[in-house]
View 1 (cartoon, helix red, strand yellow):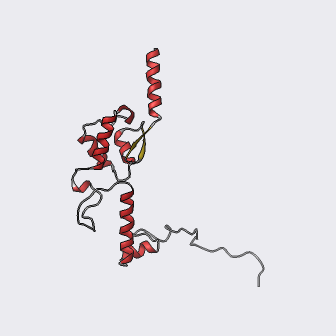
View 2 (cartoon, rainbow, N blue to C red):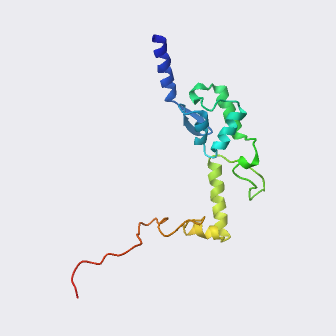
View 3 (tube, helix red, strand yellow):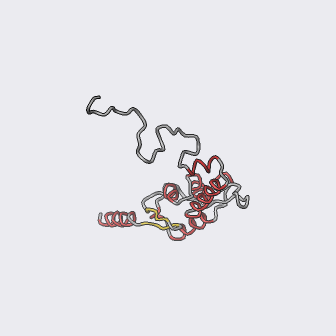
Length: 161
């Protein structure tokens, strides 16, 4: 009985800790499949690929892994060697290569792409510049940031004539 209580207590202590992978804190109580998606640039399909490549059970929680397994996961995420359709920068504008970007680098590339679209004054660039929806969404009732309501105005109550 006493041994089981100590085991439960150790598991609870480990569950509260955070594991740092590529500059992102992941709660150790998350399973591997879900926890890897907390890293910016790692989708569910990439997470599935990493779990199958390293032959890890997706339902194992991070606190159950040892340091070597966590290091293997980090190395695999840094240098993803998967099919091109899983990567997030296919046929990149600058070099024509297919890459997979993570974290801040992904944000920077996205910002550079939007700046380039604005500079060449493409349709998408103009829509970004005016802060309108880019991909054909409705504009009548959404995407208003100022809080102005379009609709019927109420008549003012007051003096007549």
